[in-house]
Amino acid sequence: MTTSGTLRILIADDHEGFRRELRETLVREPDFDVVAEVSNGLDAVREARTRRPHGLDLVLMDIDMPVMDGIQATLELAATDPSLPVIILTVSSLDGDLFEGVRSGAVGFLNKTLSPATLTRTIRDHRHTGALPMSRAMAARTIAYLRREQRASSTSEPPAAARLTRREREILLRIAAGARDREIADGLMVAETTIKTHVRHILHKLGARNRAEAVGRLGANGEV
Image (cartoon, rainbow, N blue to C red; front, side):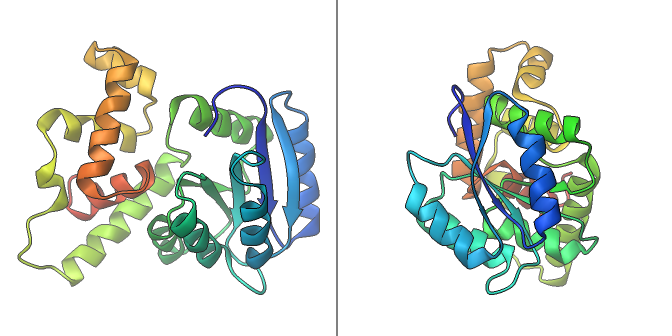
C-alpha cells in the first residue's frame, strides 16, 4: 500500500445508508479519497481489477452482500492481487466469519460501530506503519477460534511457529497484542526498519499473506 499521497479507497457494502455515512466520514480526511462504491462482492472484484494497480490502494469490504459475499470476493482478490489490502467491515459476532476472513486474505477486521475518529486512525496507522487493523477483542476471538480448530484437527506435523526465531516470535506476539512497528522497535531498542524486515521473514516462514494471517497461525498453535 502506498504510504504517501492520497489513499484511494473502494467501499463494498449493500447498505446504501452505511455506504453514504462511511463515504462522508472518509472524504472529510484530506489524505483519503473514495474512488468507487459497489453493493456486492462481484462488483467489488470487477471494480478493483479495473482500477489496479494505479487507481486503488484499499478495499473496505462488507461480509454479507448479494451475488457474491465479502469472503469470496476477498478470496478472489487475494488470489490475483495479494498486494491489495482488504479490510473487512462487519457487525458479525460469529467467530467463523472472522476466521474465514483471515483465511480469505483480509488484512484485518473493523467493527462497523467504530467511531469515525477510531476508524480513520486505524486505517491511517495500517497505511503508514503496517499496524494490524483489528481490535484486540477481535484478534483474541480469532485466535481462540483457531485454537479450537487446531485441537479438532491435530496432526503430528510440527507447529508453524516452530520455524520462527525467538525474536520473530516475540515480534509477532507484540503485533497480536496491537502494538505498532514503532512501539515494537522502541521496546526492543532496534530500528523500525529492522522490525519491518523481521515481519517480512515471519510472513515468508509461515506462508502467510499478511499480518492478520500470521497472527492467526501463531494463535492456532496456542502461543497467543
